[in-house]
Amino acid sequence: MADATAVAAAASSRDPATGLAAVASLRTLLESLEELQVRNARDQGWSWQQIADGLSVSRQAVHKKYRRVVD
Image 1 (cartoon, helix red, strand yellow):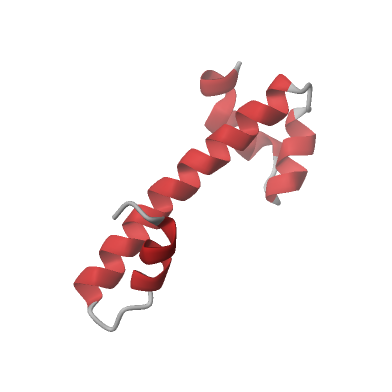
Image 2: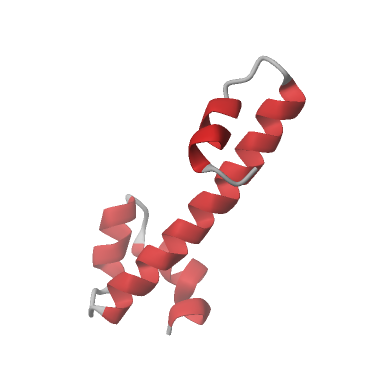
């Protein structure tokens, strides 16, 4: 499932196979977008705390998840 709009629509399907596949695709997309924005923030000098606040998570959680990917 490639088109984000179609995937989002499929996520509410009454067919569990379609819905679950869509949820898995959305999860992958979300992870990619989050990593992109964390990289953008770090490239622009944002602190881990600022990023954590933007994601509504703890500084420790975001640092643990992305420290190897971004720094």
